[in-house]
Length: 262
Image (cartoon, rainbow, N blue to C red):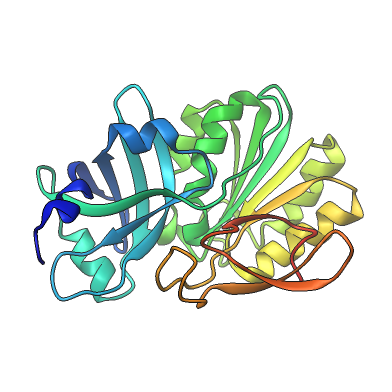
């Protein structure tokens, strides 16, 4: 990698690196200016060291303004994320942050339900830290070996509900069943969700049925992460119902669920 003045401005120390599961890693990055600006729902764009041209967008999982750090949790899914997983404390990483449009949050005393599916679970953690005991966190994973962050959510004081597709941990089945049960028990002020498209579609449908505001973080594949390459365009509609294409990286990744054409 070419190390010029511009590159140095984007290079930040890795404070810690922890393996959570066989595929998932947690990285804490020392970046005081970015941490001061970051909001829940935004993401970082990392350039792996080596022969890589495209950055890897990864949701922000933790914001510590006092320590001046951001935390990310990601899965190894290719050569780029494999290179990122090989970083250790004391190494540096090239990063653009914070990027994107995050969640628009009500007062922290509001009851909210946070729904995360798989690697869409990490961006729910800053929300759980913000709402604390007023949050219900529903997480869904393939099986017990893929489960992450449950202790982190519990440490926030949030009510945590775990679901797995095969029933090997927590509740057997999809997150939509406990989501509807929690809605019926006490209607929340907001539902926030991030995960696979079918899960988001189902959460948005329940929110509409029960007339609850819902914000979703979309996981479209990104190229540049800056709104230039058009790879992450998604179909949405404006206030008048007119169809339009917006960029997940620039206009999102968080959208009002009623904006999205499912």
